[in-house]
Amino acid sequence: MTTEFKEGDTVQLKSGGPIMTIESRQNDGSFWCVWFNTAKDGSSEKKGSDFKPFMLTPA
Image 1 (cartoon, rainbow, N blue to C red):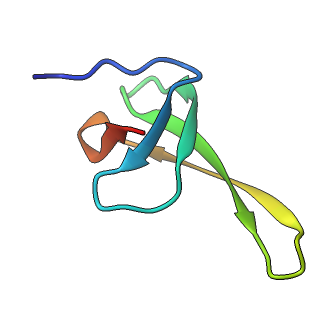
Image 2 (cartoon, rainbow, N blue to C red):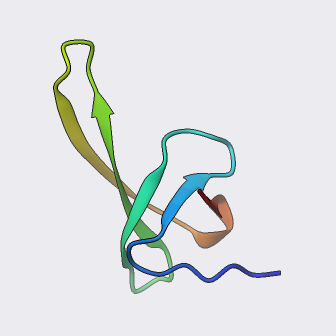
């Protein structure tokens, strides 16, 4: 069964990690995902990376 993802979906890596939001689909079929890292002082930093669909699961 193949899961189709779209912009705005929340996903997580199958291996775990933070819940991410799909921002866009790349030309190679991967998805650009964004999430926030929160520091101990309460500040947060936006992070992003691309992932192949087989690496993701719906959150």
